[in-house]
Length: 333
Image 1 (cartoon, rainbow, N blue to C red):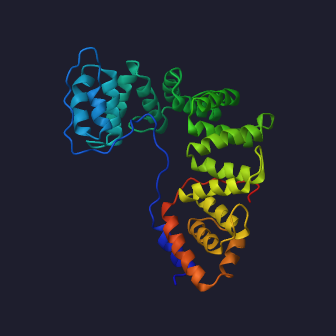
Image 2: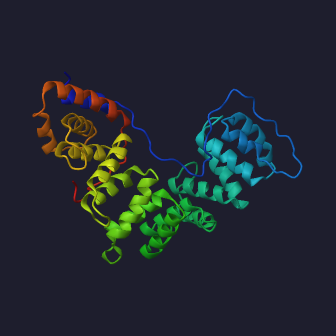
Image 3: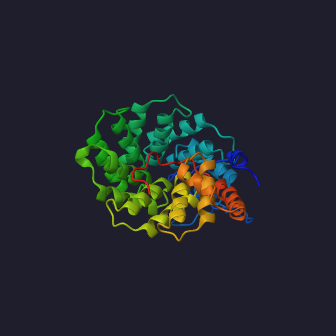
């Protein structure tokens, strides 16, 4: 039977998966064996065949259709070329060319391109980092009610980089982005209500927004909402529902959730006592960097057969490792 150190070494070699995505990049549909559609003109209809080809995964077709339009000054086609170069789909990834196409499209009034260009300026991708100019681009896109732009603009006001330090303005923008459905804004707004200035703290509001972000699939929100639900902070206590949220986040690879779920199985809080699952989740969490001396003691109390099954369980589930960890969750169950 492998030792805990061997398990940890094996699991540390598992590549971690990035979580989340970029909402403004079109969703992809797996390519099919059917030939790409021809750009036939239909009277009375305007169709973006380049974008349609992109959606189907026909990136070279999208490139060939979009390039002449982009060179002729079409901002939608310019934006699509920016996406192709930024993501490296159908051609080599080239951040400089992506930024150039986004800049052209944004100067022609394309608000989605303004958002993409702002993000590249914010992070210094393909262009020199310029948070003031990034804020200008976010303002353009925010005025078109693009949630991600509003969220990023809030971040600049919150840190005082690229915009004057203004927590009130940051909160106002976060609330707007959250109302428009941005999951990161909902999570950060909940955090603001939990950990922000004393005069705006509200556990009820925090639980409301944390729950909405959790239901949208934000793994960090699922962990913190589970803790709020377990302890009845801002929401009615429900240990079973809390364990459900821990399990969702654990299955997504979050090591904090793995640890908390292990404790629910160990102590029968929201789950029936199951030492095999308790040990398995604990070993997975420990291999991913979460220590828990109390749970370590549990391993010494289980028989060899249960420990062997828990080891296999840990190897299987820790493969879904998620680097998004909730730091210092308070009132931990």
